Length: 241
Image (cartoon, rainbow, N blue to C red; front, side):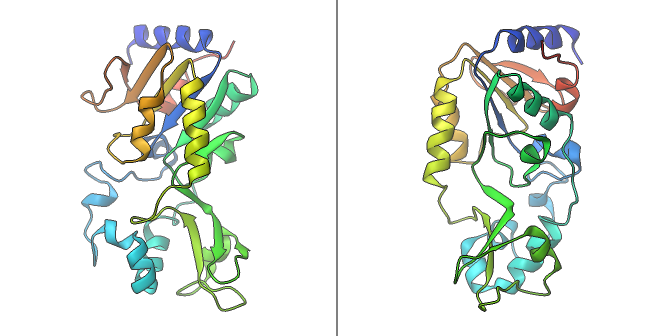
């Protein structure tokens, strides 16, 4: 890892007053959760139907058993724990320097690490609701259910995640936009920035320093300081002072 890049990021973090972190699947790979678009990712594996369909609203409605078979096997089969990046961001928030985490991930690891202001653009596997009566059901219940998970009332229990064909939550998006627009520093990590509308939120940043951290040397944003690194490894070298 380039020592000069670490030194520059340290300086940026030292001066930040309202830092916003925008993260994608690459933030959780260090916790053992595979991403989607890498050569070994979900989109390069073979299934009965394409992953985009298996994780779609249409599949949930028309092939509910297939949906949950795929969902259990590929989305919630990991007992992952927060990594260095999650813990660093939670500590930075407690220090009053980080104003929000905006994440495309649905694993809930930022909250597990202690972060309080987290905008989960695509929802969370930790929240599950009956489509009939609205009762909350835990992730453990969904994992343990045989076949399609059902509520006591007979309704299907749906994960509170944004499926293909569904829109993002307006309140979550509005909160994320406000945080990004008021930030003086934004760090983008572990995302290809190709999934819209989430990736489009980056355009609301008008702050002083924009940092992009990714393993792909070609992955960058115009005007950003790019660091080629795993985000957890990088942030473990940064001090909060």
